[in-house]
Amino acid sequence: AQSVTQLGSHVSVSEGALVLLRCNYSSSVPPYLFWYVQYPNQGLQLLLKYTSAATLVKGINGFEAEFKKSETSFHLTKPSAHMSDAAEYFCAVRGGSGTYKYIFGTGTRLKVLA
Amino acid sequence: NAGVTQTPKFQVLKTGQSMTLQCAQDMNHEYMSWYRQDPGMGLRLIHYSVGAGITDQGEVPNGYNVSRSTTEDFPLRLLSAAPSQTSVYFCASGAGGGETQYFGPGTRLLVL
Image (cartoon, rainbow over all chains, first blue to last red; front, side, top):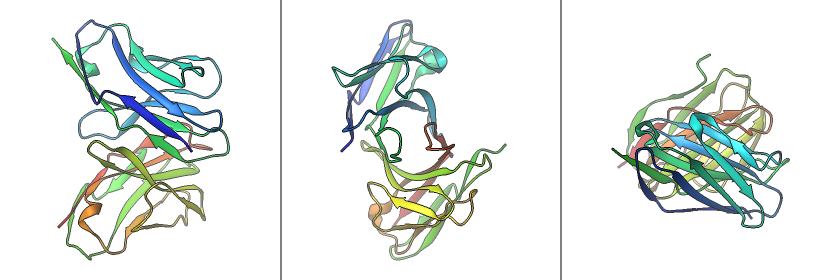
């Protein structure tokens, strides 16, 4: 069975500070992992994905995430927060090739303080 | 390309009524899916399809039906609406196995 845990439903950072959003997963097979962003009253947009290639994945808007199998983690980071990064972020897992069920985390709302 | 479109944007139903949420995509994607989003619960998969004529259940399928007669369309049917189905519904599509999902703008449903 697959599951995703996002630690912290709300995270606040100052503009220019490091952004760190945490995601831990469980999967019985090598997973595909994703981070999506949702701006108010919009659908979700893919930030980045891990599909068993490089463990450090770079995405859009300066975000990146590192797949750590030993820690079953896929934390999202950005070196310097911008006001426009304020949104809700979702981590998701899919159990690898041949499976099509996505499991999403409960989301982390990022607030950026001026 | 319009991407993924959903209609209606907002709907109010009475308990027991039925309705169909429409979803269409113009990207020739094989994979399509329906999610519901509730506060504090993230997105939960209702049903998905890997091609025309092929559908399967997700995490929370009860109370919902789907069919996939064409590649473009993937409607979600509520046969007898219940207040517990008040939610925001998102449709998504993706190429192949849907590794990258493209989401529609959502339908906000209120069941009284």
